[in-house]
Image (cartoon, rainbow, N blue to C red; front, side):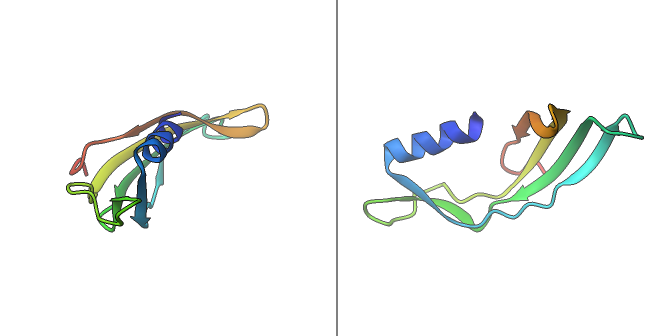
Length: 95
């Protein structure tokens, strides 16, 4: 819902993004260890080469260039598939 909300907001404001965010998530815990149904993930997402642009003019929106952010997620095995139970993106510079 968080990501979809941002995408809808961008469309309504005429904003596009350019560049590629870099992620390298790692597993921080699994539960239970022998047959996991819950996994916690941690990343330091790098969006330094990703920015927002005005779609009409093509100009970069001032202050939109990213940086490093702490990203955490909890995924759970539900009805035969992994589903995101929680997801949090920290402030710029949080990792």
